[in-house]
Image 1 (cartoon, helix red, strand yellow):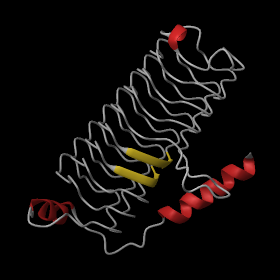
Image 2 (image 1 turned 30 degrees about the horizontal axis):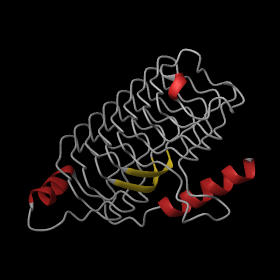
Image 3 (image 1 turned 180 degrees about the vertical axis):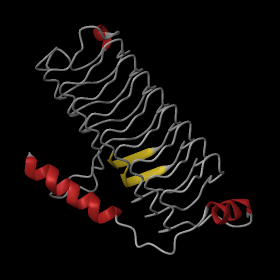
Length: 240
């Protein structure tokens, strides 16, 4: 298992290292966002540490961009391409990432409190990420079964905080998310098959219609979750 995690990390690290152009300023990014005649092209740009809060980057191409330490609070990133982007220790409080693509992304230690990720596609490293009260309705965080090599393309969310998040109809198949905090989260009809949910806290969470088939639930706190009777797969789990 340790070898698999190391291989997974190496794969995502390889995918996510941008080939950076010259660092841009906030003013330059704003100038690009005001040009409505062209798609915003920030591909492989170094935007690390910038304050980009409340900027409209809807549909922008941020493929392999460096957004480490950025402040993107309230930014509009709906429909944006953030594949292979580095967004570590960034603040995206109340940012709109609905229908955005975040494939092979690195979001470790970032704050997405109350962010909107409805119908987004996310694969990558999200360890210690904060999704408190975020909206992930219909988001696809499930493993990419078409790209399964020695290190499967899946989401890793160790110690993630999803307190009060709306995860209804979310796809978390094969997700690696031990020690996650899902207190009071909405997991109605969530797909959690084969996910590693060991030691995850579901206290007060809504799990009606959720599918836990073949999930790892060792040490998970499910006794005070709501809707257990209609959840699937719990009777076969090691810790029902």
